[in-house]
Image (cartoon, rainbow, N blue to C red; front, side, top):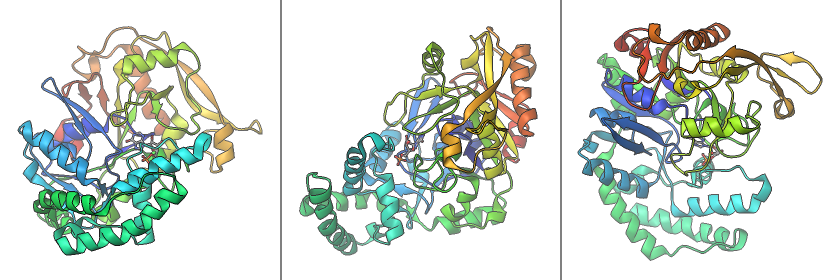
Length: 428
Ligand code: IMP
């Protein structure tokens, strides 16, 4: 199980890609095209939206029931990746996953517009409204694509209501039924071959002792229940979410690898205690190429926050940690690392505040670690790291009491240092 430990964009795609080599099946269990994985392989850049990263190794891939699927994006991705020679026929799509419809995207945009200054800063991909309809039991599911009559009927019923909302509440354009129904029937024909009983498929793979990798989307602090609500996404992003998101029991998850950047980024609105003040913010952003995969938005950058990471370790039960993009920190004399928060009443704590107001007003308390200036891109193993970089990693491991088993030192697939054999890491 691989899960993001911060606010998403931790570089999970690259870690999944690395461990997918030793896997038989790679599964996504939450989110939709709001997640974007960028993977650089053999000099080619792949931007994955729906597809699990295992597709780059030709692995069988699952998109589970906990996901939301935008058929338009899915078809685009099939064409793009298929056209570049990847075996997209190995993708299996759960019939229980929900479909993102054009009204979901329109409502997402309209809702953000209405919220004005209070907006969440969503990716505007229709994620929240799709999960809302799922909870309202009004959603259209992937399996509805299997029957043209059912699909048409469900679109018609939903649209009659959604058009009223679009027009009256959001002042947006309404959607025309015939054109939509025809377009979706076209998507249905493309998607049908991929639909299968993915819960059974994963269960069988596990029974046959095949190696299954679960790929979490987004990050811990974007979790709908335990994240920095309301500035979160609408799905369960935690390791435990993989069980309902795929339709397996929680006892089937053997190990949980958290992925954290060596610093922190966040896109969208919401509190961010270690956000950097001053020119270093831009320096980190430029060095790290911190611009969104999905929306191209500028990512806010901050120093490493161990209070939030400790919380992530608690929520997910990390058995080990991957620290990515350590190379980005290679040109700072000193590196502040937040080990505690100072709360409004002056009390210092190393635990994540349970109350939102405490978190909103928390001030970071930093320990300053020595930086290093040597580039890391040529480093081949852990022993080759500059002393200060090694000390930085050891500090994180000690503070969290979790082994750091992988360290990212550059964008290329090979630029990862491993504490153990990859096969052993992949098997927990
Ligand atoms: P939504 O998921 O589009 O509803 O957006 C809700 C919040 O989650 C916004 O702050 C987004 O920027 C953030 N978000 C959603 N997915 C990701 C991701 O994969 N990486 C980083 N932030 C994300």
